[in-house]
Image 1: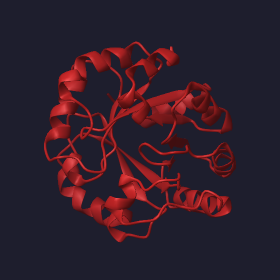
Image 2: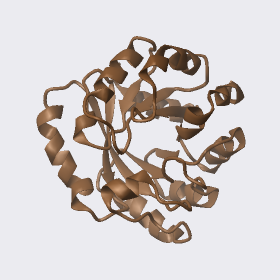
Image 3: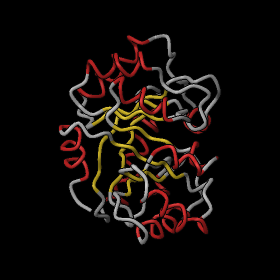
Image 4: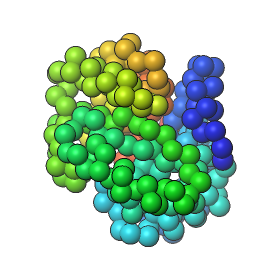
Length: 240
């Protein structure tokens, strides 16, 4: 799989709505891979993200290898740590947690990863990652020891996203967090989108088709859904 990012840009230019399923190896049964990916292939999902805040070493490698045997969709790593990097995937979100101020997740982990990435053929996509508060503490907060941005401080979120763009990020990811009580609001999505010249990803807390469409209509170029599928695979049926 080549030119993931360029293909995404083409899809956005064609006004296509992109949807990624996020598979967390820490919460996913590898035995269920074949059946789950068959449902993914039959749905409107366009990309598969794999990763989580805390994943046992080696599990991501095994899972991604199995997923790649079952689908032609792009498989992109969403790593919480360098131990989740595997050459079996097609690409990797090079996430910089620009909403936080922990140097490890702004640049430290990235430097640590280079000796591994140098040996892979992964397409690396630099991503400005912004955690927005959702009503509950998330795994991202616990692992990174950073606080989410106040959902009411929209201008601060806008400025952070724009700073990420000006730093050279290829896209911005607004994240409410896994299992969020509330998704990122349409007001935030719309306001951030108005400022950006790069694609916008939105994820966290989206549990219904209406919330999915609301995110698209507000300006999301790619929406990520994880927990809704983990908790209820019949959610696929609402997306056909």
